[in-house]
Image 1 (cartoon, rainbow, N blue to C red):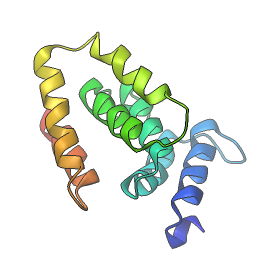
Image 2: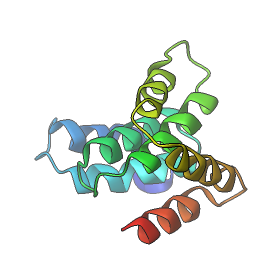
Image 3: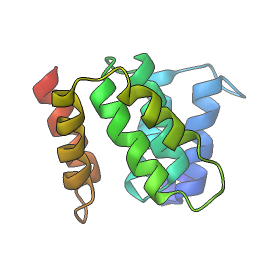
Image 4: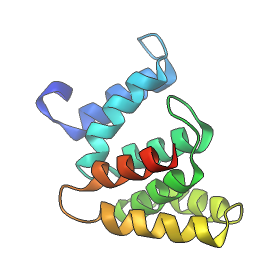
Length: 128
């Protein structure tokens, strides 16, 4: 199902790689599957990508990208779980005004149709 574009299955596979559950733990592979699900609006995948960017797991650490991902996840999450919102608030206390403004620009770009990953990748490449 993950290979057929099912966001929930993609998120599940990403989680398996992230946790090393049933497969060898592989953060880069987890990110591949989270990206596919996140691009389709899966809030859990967006949140987990935020954690990966925040901790530098499978990617270079980037708190601006993490903040943007947590914020988008919180906006997309219809569930009562507000972990992404809390994570974005916690990160904001560690960020400069310039970093927060950069994250807000990324969030704006991510919200455009079919621009979620393009906006994220563009920022990460520039920051890299």
